[in-house]
Length: 417
Image 1 (cartoon, rainbow, N blue to C red):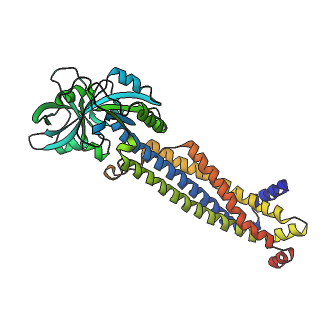
Image 2: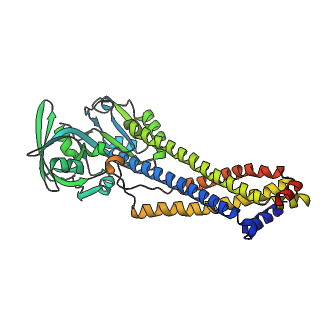
Image 3: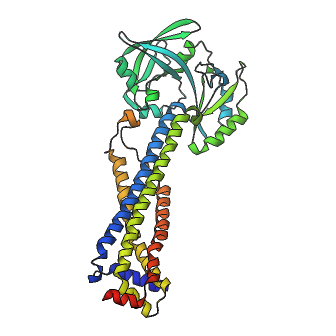
């Protein structure tokens, strides 16, 4: 019976005679509806994944996946140092999923030119610091802030800060720091200008040598604001966080300061909560597109069934059971859906690839934090979308085939007349 249903479905699908004049437009509309619906779902998921990945990379680029810092600095802007020596660094490398460790030091100051001034957070970095993120976002100059040359203080600033203070690469700028009740002054030279479009950070962060910040804060060589842990995969973050809580938190350094750890989710809960809300938009798009595709598919199949009532009556008169005829039209609908799915994949992936390679669709970085629409083509998720679409389509196509059970050979003859 399966082979008979499949054979009849193929004959109906390939038929180009007079009996298909009415149903042909409906079939085409159903195919187009399925293709557009699937393409929209693929593009939507790819855009949301790309956007989330881009924002996550920028936030992680500024603060890594997890940090170890002073317990008294967790909920306070005051920078209280901890001693991070080589033995602690070796211990932290034992944490699951850790790929790289880097020390950093913070100090708050004011940048001043002849006409303007601006409060900033100065982040000191050393030779061990991974500068790939900064290099990927540099727009002018270089990330050469680490120097052993005495008295040569380089600084890396954002484009927002450069525009506000009218600075360029090579410009001289003075910085003022309030430490231990006294004001310390340093002269910096702008070595480079970066732009991540993540306004929260671009407006505040500048980078310089970690030794400069340690001297400004009157810290010893082994005292820093903390240590950043970069992981091989964000999925390992929960395991790493649990390991830090068990092996690092509440331990003390040589100065009696207590260690504490934080993940990037705990440091920036608002940003990640906002990114999670984007998933709701994807589900709404899924529901809308599946509804549109379902309506077009059901309508198209109903038209085909009504057009084939004489054939249905003849098959019943010859002894065909309702299940055979229903399976025939179910296979026919699956062929329509299959063709639409193929077209939808080609269209959706083509749009994603074109946007990935050309960046033809641009955005306002002040609003969206990225200058172009970001696309992440995730093959496993796209395959899941296809599988889910096929399952839902087959389930929906069973609805119009119920009509076959209510058609009698006598009625079909009258219908033909």
